[in-house]
Length: 323
Image (tube, rainbow, N blue to C red; front, side):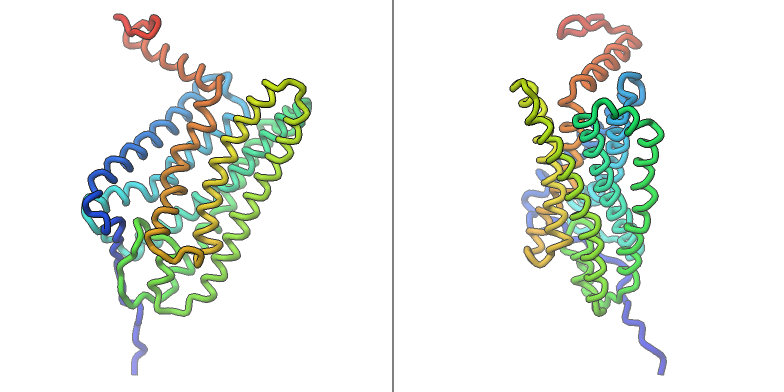
C-alpha cells in the first residue's frame, strides 16, 4: 500500500478584514495613504543622507540603512493587504506564502539588531563623546551594519524551512492579512510542538535580547542626561530619547506578544490589530521620530528642495514659490 500524501493544500486564502466589509474602502484608503507616506518618507531620508555631506556620519548612515530596511519590511505585507481589501479574499500559493514569511522574519530580525546598533551609537555619542570618533569609526560602523544583514539570513530561513516541512490538510483559509507564523501553525495537521518551541526560542533570542540591549543603552543615556547641569539641555535630550523609546516599545511589545506569548490573545481579530502596529505603524513612525525631529536633517531637506526648485527655475522667497 502506497503512503498517502497528507499535504494536500497548494494555496491559501487570506481572509484579511472580511468581517469589516462596510469599512473596506475606508481601510484601503487609510492603509494606502500610510504606505505611500512610509515609502516617501524613507526614500527622502535615503536621498538626503546620500546627497548632503554633513549627514555622512555613523548616526545618519545607520538611519539610511534603517530606512532602506523599512521600505522592504513594510512592502512585504502592506501591498498584499491592499490587494486583499480590494478583492475580499486574496489567494496565495503555498510557496509564495512561505517566501513571504521568510522575508518578513528576515527583515524583522534585521531591524531588531539595527535598533540595537543605533541605540549603542547614541550611547557612545552622549556618554563617550571624546572617544566617539574612534569607537564608531566608518570601518566599525560598516562592520556593525553588515552583521545584521549577514547573520539574520538564518533567522529568516529557519522558521520558513520548518513551516515548509509541515503538513496542511485543510482548511486553507488564513484568518490574517499575511502569512504569519501563529496563523499557519493553527492550520497544520502535523505535530507542531517542535516548531512552536523553536519559534519560541528564536523569538526570545531575537526580540527579548535585542530589546534588553537597547533598553540598557537608553538607561545609560538617561543616567548621563541627569548629570547635565542645564534643565533646557536635559529636556531636549529627554524628548528625543522618549520618542525613540516609545516607538521601540511599541515595536518590541507588539511583536513579543505575538511570538513570545501567542496564547495571551487567541482571538484572530486581536492578532490582526496587534500586527498592524509592527507592520504598518512603526515603519511610518521611524522616519518621523529619527529624522524629521532632527535639526540637521530638516536643514538638509530644505537645502535639497531649494536646489531642486532652482533646477526648475523656481526661486523660494518666504513661503511662496515665484517664477
